[in-house]
Image 1 (cartoon, rainbow, N blue to C red):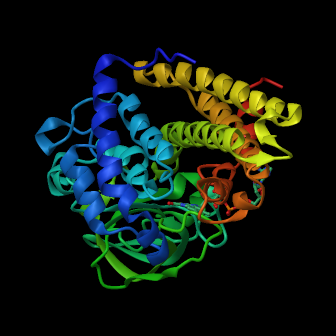
Image 2: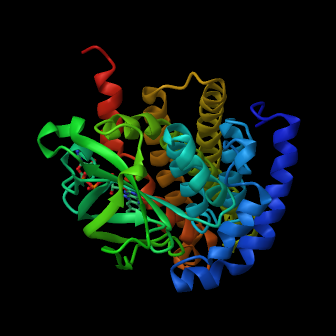
Length: 382
Ligand SMILES: Cc1cc2nc3c(=O)[nH]c(=O)nc-3n(C[C@H](O)[C@H](O)[C@H](O)COP(=O)(O)OP(=O)(O)OC[C@H]3O[C@@H](n4cnc5c(N)ncnc54)[C@H](O)[C@@H]3O)c2cc1C
C-alpha cells in the first residue's frame, strides 16, 4: 500500500535513521537483551545523530520542528530491523518524556536540562505508576511536602522504563493529598539526589533490553526550582501528554504488525511441508491475506491521525481509538505469525517469537485497552 503521509524530507531522514539502526542497534541486540539494559552510548549516539530532540528548539541542539512524523520514523525503522523493543528507551525519551520538558520548563530549567537531554547525555524517565496505582493516576500516594526552598518526597514507583539509566526522573507526586487529582504535581528529580534509589531490574516476559525497575524516594529533598509547571496541575499535564504517548505506541504496534506479516510471508514462501511451501495451503494463504489487509487498514487510519497530529488537530479520543485498535491488532497478527512459523515461532532466536513477547505489553502500558474504551465511551454523550 502506498503511503502519502511522508514528504521527501521525511524519506531522506528515514534513510539516515535506517543506517543508524543497522550500525548502532542491530549489532548489539543480543548483548543488550542478555544484559537487560542498553549501553548509555546508544542515547549519546542517537542524540548526536539528532534523533532525540527533533521537537526541541535549535538553540538547545534540537531539530526545531514539532512534526511527530519524524519521531514515528524512528519506531518504524527499529521495527523493520526487529529491534523495536531494544530502542524503546529512545522512544520514551524523545516521544514521551521530552515533551513534558518542552512544554513546561521555565527558561532557567530549559537551559539547565534541555541541551544534555537532546544530546543524549542525560537520560529521562517518566514515573507515574506506583505499586497501588496504575490506571488510576489520581490514586498515587507518593508525597512531596514543601519545606522552604525544597520539596521532601517520600514514596515509590514501579514498572518505570529507563529506571536504571535515568538521570532525570519526571515524577508525579501529591503536593496536596486531600485534593485528589488537583493535588498532583510534577517534579524533576535528579538521580544523584540523596534518598533516591532504584530497585533491581524487573524480569519481564519480553522487552528484555528495556530497563524497567522500581524507584524509591526516602526523604528526597528536591529543589522547588525543579517543579515542572504549576503546583496542582500535574494530572492535567499528564492527561495532555498522553495523546502523543498513545499515538507513539500506536505507531509501534502498527510497525510491529507489519513486520510480523512480512516475516511470516517470507517464512511461508520458504518452509516446505507435504511437498510444497506452507503458504500454498489455502488456509495459510487466507491467514496471510487477512494479516496484510488488517495491517493496511490500520496503517491508513494511523497515517490519517499522524497527519492530524502534525497539523495539531489530534484529540485524546482519536489517540485512544488508535491506541487500543492497533495494539489489539498487533497481538492478533504476531500470534498468527507465531502459528505459521510452527515450532520455530516459539524459539527466542526467531524475530517473530521476540515480537510476540515484546508486543504483549502494548495493550497495557500507556493506558490499557479498557481505559481507552472508557475514554472513547465517555465522549459519546451517552
Ligand atoms: C514494561 C512496562 C513499562 C512501563 N513503563 C512505565 C513508565 O515508564 N512509567 C510509568 O509511569 N508507568 C509505566 N508502566 C506502567 C503501566 O503504564 C501500567 O502498568 C498500566 O497503566 C496499568 O496499570 P496497572 O498495571 O496498575 O494495572 P491496573 O490499573 O491495576 O489495571 C488492572 C486491570 O484492570 C483494568 N481496569 C482498571 N481500571 C479500569 C476501569 N476504569 N474500567 C475497566 N477496567 C479497568 C485494566 O484495564 C487492567 O486490565 C509500565 C509497565 C510495564 C509493564
